[in-house]
Amino acid sequence: MARYAYVNGRYVDHRLAKVHVEDRGYQLADGVYEVVGVRDGKLIDETPHLDRLDRSLKELRIAAPVSRKTLTFVIRELMRRNRLRDGLIYMQVTRGVARRDHAFPTIPVKPALVLTTKNTKPVGIDVGPGIAIKSQRDIRWERCDIKTVALLPNVLAKQAARESGAYEAWLVDSAGCVTEGASTNAWIVTRDGELVTRQTDNGILAGITRGTLKSIADTLQLKLVERPFSLTEAKQAREAFITSATSFVTPVVKIDGEPVGDGKPGPTARRLREEYVRFADTGEAVA
Ligand code: PMP
Image 1 (tube, rainbow, N blue to C red):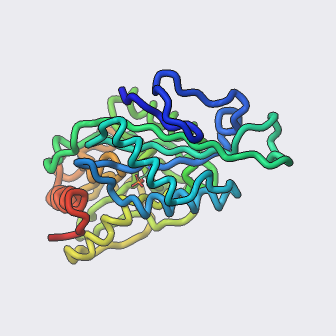
Image 2: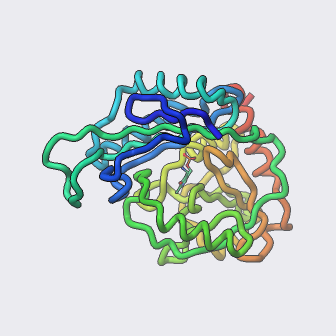
């Protein structure tokens, strides 16, 4: 367990870290968050993550709690105090503490900032056995591009997946297309060898790992198409995989109990995982 959390300007014992009961994040999910992966003591894609945090705040008209300079300092100080080498940094900003009312507070309140860290084993270059997916209806709102702490549909989808023995849920919209995972972006490699992931708009979160992988795919001269793909197409794909700051590139070998391709991690996912790990290690997209 991490030793310290950062709460509104103070580094406090993680076990005793608290926020106010009238915090709008707690009562109304009126807040946003970011997760940045840490590998061998280095942050992965820090700038795009902090840019996305700024964007989420702007979309919800929440002021930045501290400057970028301060935030980057706090991140490093918390990493140092928690001796974080491999794992993640979690950052959360809520609109702040105010008497409960759905509308924004009419008197100025300070946004609340919390940071925690989590130590994990370093993600290996080997993809492992791959994961199983369960499809679930996408019942989320129309602003999935904002990384808000309002995650109940994602929580329920993930739980349904776990109860069925799958690791991740793929969310399916009213047209039968996969939008993304409960906490990851979704990709397939079609029978024609096209790498496909859904275009970014209000329907999905623009994953930072997704963005970096796009440049890696480009450098590797893979044919990448950003378009919707149906659950049926995914089940008939040659390969499928997920991406996120913590799972990097992880192959999908089963969807709703049916094997994807030959039911084993495929060469594209393996190669992209390798290159992403290299990027996380060196900061460079392809050696
Ligand atoms: N989609 C959703 C819904 C997520 O919660 C996440 C994880 N933050 C992602 C995609 C992947 O984004 P990233 O690559 O920035 O971790």
